[in-house]
Each structure stands twice: as structure tokens, then as C-alpha cells.
Length: 310
Image 1 (cartoon, rainbow, N blue to C red):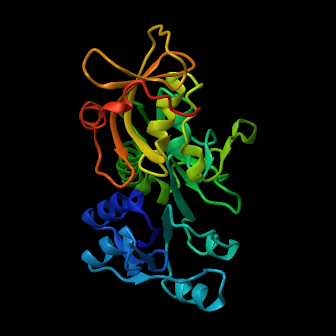
Image 2 (cartoon, rainbow, N blue to C red; image 1 turned 45 degrees about the vertical axis):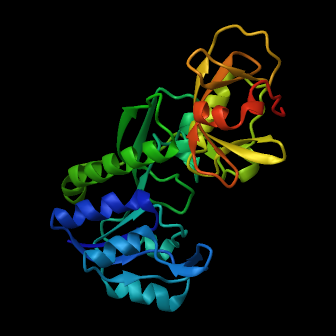
Image 3 (cartoon, one colour; image 1 turned 30 degrees about the vertical axis):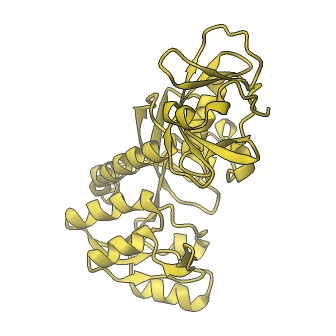
């Protein structure tokens, strides 16, 4: 069976690695073109390209699969199936129709619950008890194709988008290996999605991460976890941004005004919110390294009793 793999970020790496380790014939790896990164703006390889090169696989990086020459190059590979994991390009109908066993997308949500670019963050933002991954037969819509298989795991209190995304990527990789033989043999009928149950979430902006301390502590806690590692949650103090990396909600009644910093019994910083206190576990002052809030308070004594903007 000839497989073409398409993916770009870290999410896609476990899928590619497990297919190769299990002796699947990956004839080519498609990933986004190299982009400038860092202060020197040097051209950087995507995580998938780095992994593919380490595995000795052919790497293809077209600007667009809509171009005739790009499609012809793909068609010449004669793929039996195309596996897609966060590739970053919309596939044309011609590409979708190319492989005998279709294009299978690994999507990190329990479709149709969260469609779009940020399904993992959406799950954390909404305080879901469970998150999951779906294997979907791709069609021309945005995450609208029929579902082949799904699996789920509980969302834990320490899960942020980075941690949960990695968990789901590994789970999706094993799920793909589990179902692929039966899918090829026609033993798995795909299930049409219920469009009425779908939710779409667009890309999260940097401004989304600015904390409004008038919101309940639990809601802010969800945002801190959902927006980590990107774009991050932050507040402003003395003209600088403070990124809140890790936090915990404390529901006890407090008399401080919204946004007021208080010192908790364990020496860490807490901030009064619209409902409860948010304990700040780890923060990062603009231009500084991450540190515990207790350490920050020892170096920035004036932070205690500060009023942070809502």
C-alpha cells in the first residue's frame, strides 16, 4: 500500500513516525514550505520535514496543490491513500479523488463538536471533561467529511493546549494504525456528521489572551490553559506585560476588588476576580525568564496589593 503523508506541525510527527516504525510504505511526505524564523530570520524546516529527513523519506513542499505541476507530481506517486494531519493547505477535489482509499484526516476533536483551526483550545475553553480525536474521510468542506473512527480521553486539570495536543496526536496515530487495515478492506462504514451539532472556532489572536479580572477565576483558568503555549494569557503591570503561564482557581469568598493582588498562605500570589481567587503558580515578566509567583514577589515586593487592569 502506497501512502502519501501530509502534515506540518508537531501534532503530525507521531503519526508519521508510527507509520514508518510499523513498516507502512510512505512514498512521500508533503509539508509546508520553509519559513523564516527567529531573530536572524533564517529559513526553518517544519517539525514534519525534520522528522521525514531523519527517516530518510522524500519531502515535497509545494506552495499550492492547486497548481497543475504540483498535482501531476502528486499523481505520479500513485498513492493508495493520503493521510493528512494538520497539513495547512486545502486539498482540491482532484486531490481528494486521487487515492483509491481516499484521504484520511486526523482531527483533534470529537467531530462535529469542534471544527476549524483550534479544536483543542476550544475544548479547554469550554471546560469539557473529555477531548478526543477523529479520523475522517475528507471532503471539500472544512472538517465536514464522514467520520471513520473516534477515541477520547479525559481532560485533566493540568492539561493545557500544548500537553493535550500531544496526547491527542499520539492517540490519533495509534487509532490510525488500528483502523487502517480494516478501512482498506472496506469493513468500516464512515458515519455522516450531524452538521447541526457543529461548532466553528477561528484562529485565536494575541489580544484574546489579555485577562479580564472581572471574569470568574474558573473562566480565566480555562483561558490560561487554552492559550498556552500560544498566544499566551497576560496582564499588564507598570507598563509591562506579565504572562500567566500556570494558575489554579480558588473559589473561596474574598473581599478584595477585582484585579487586586493578594499574598496567599503558601507565599504565592493570588488575584481577586469576579468570582473567587486565581492562584498564580508560574508567571513571566516581559523580558525575563518564567518563575514561580512566590519568587517573583520576593523580587518585586510592590507587586503585592497591586491592582491589575480589568
